[in-house]
Image 1 (cartoon, rainbow, N blue to C red):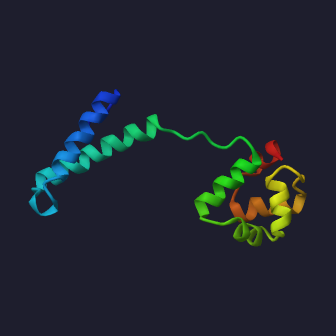
Image 2 (spheres, rainbow, N blue to C red):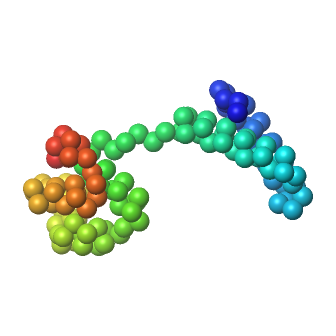
Image 3 (tube, rainbow, N blue to C red):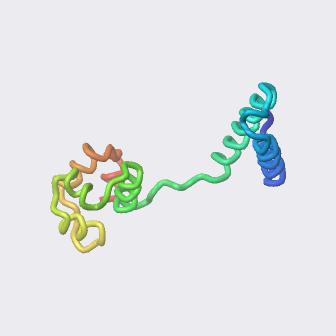
Length: 121
C-alpha cells in the first residue's frame, strides 16, 4: 500500500476509485475489487492523518461530543446523568457550576476521563 503525501495524490486515488466503482459491482473483477480496497485504505489513512478533529478543551465541549457520539438529545442526557433538564441546560450554558454529583455522573455515564474532568471543571 502506497502512502499518500499530497492532496493531488489523494485526488488521483479518489478519481481511480470512482472510475473503478462506476463500472458497477457486477462488472468489477476480483483484481479490481482488491485494488479498490487497497486504494480506499490508502485514502482512509491519508484522511485520518490530514483531517483530525482536535479534542474538546472544555467540559461542556466534551459533554457535547459525548452526546453526539451516543446520539443523545439533551433530555435523554439529563435522564442518563440523573439531573433535571433545567439543571443540565444551566450547566451547559455556563449559568451554573457543575456539582460533584453531576461530575461523577459525567465520569461514570459518559466515560469522560477523570483527569479531564479535574482539569476542566
